[in-house]
Structures are given as structure tokens and as C-alpha cells.
Length: 229
Image (cartoon, rainbow, N blue to C red; front, side):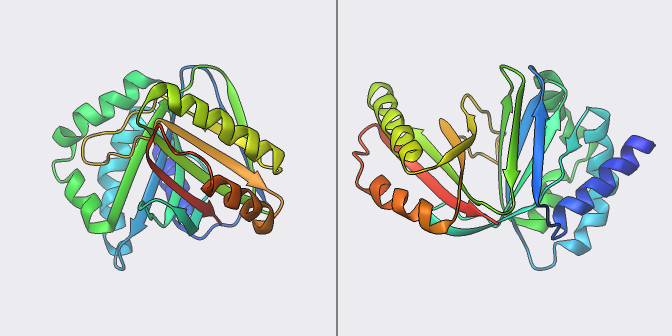
């Protein structure tokens, strides 16, 4: 009961406009990170109570824990994915994460309908941690999420290497790099490479952005890039 209460309160905090100066996220090897990209419908809140009462208990039972932090999205610089919110979540392991996907339809028959009533866009990628990791996101700095889908592996590796060099030279701080993600059917958003960078300010990022646009995109099939508030 305490776990369920915590889960509900945590989700309310996530969906509220909660402002944090900095947030550190710690993951042990084998734990799973969810990255949720959402766009709220205007009347989403009137459906949320039912969602808390039906979906949350199942997720909590299977180890899900929403993580503090709410990031609104702005300044879409590249690509056609334009969600409005980014949230993080955690599961104990990949087995429990995928058990939830396999069983939620039986446990909550209108689960997907409920989500459709609340969110006009819902992209989900989950990542099993290969090692212990810790990353900190600062409210004061300018934060950018960049995702790439590869077209040809060798050319993409060359592109990524060049991208990282240019980012580092321009002052970009890599907060998190993710590969080998998975996406459930119906919520597919699975880039081959996702990276979150932090910059001292928007101007510093824009200097890099101008160089980024000049790069040779051979090996890249698609991309998405936006800033977090």
C-alpha cells in the first residue's frame, strides 16, 4: 500500500509543473530506464484519476518507479518528432519491464484507450543498463536531446565520432548516451543513438548547431533534436 501511495504521488509530481534546480539519476547494472515523450491533450487531467487507479498498481507490482523531474520541450531544431514533455522511469530489470508490456492488456483491458484519451503523442524507449551509471541534469544549463537513426553502420560511426568531437570542442557536456533501446508496439520511438548534452547557455549550443548542420549526414536515416526546459 505504501508503495502504491508513493507511486501515485510521484506521478502527480511528474505531471505537475515541478521545477528542480538539478536532479541526479542513479541506475545499477541491469536496471531499466524508461524515456517517455508525451503531448498532453487539453482534458487529460479528467482521465488521469482512473489511470492512477488501474495502471499504477500493476506497474508498481512489477517494480516500476517514476523518477522525479518534469521536462517541458521547446526549440525543436531538427526532425519531425515534436513531443511536449520528457519523463524518466525505472524498473528493476528487463524481465519485469517486459512482463508489464505482456500482461497489462489482460490486467487493464482499456489501458491503451486510457492513454489515447490523455496523450495525443506517446513515444517510449526503454534501455537496460549495461553498467552502473549516474547522470545529473541541471536546471540552469541549456539541455538538448539529440536522437539519430542510422542508415549504414560504418558511415554512421564516422558521423557520430565527428559529432562528438565537434560537440566537445564547442563546450557541450555529454550527460547521457544511450544505445540498444527497445520500444513497445504502438509507442515506437527507438533511435539507434540518443544523447543528452548540456551547454552553458543557448548561444553556446547554437554555435555548435551551425556546425552540426554543415556535417555530412551520410549514414543517418533520420534525426530528432530539441531542448529541455
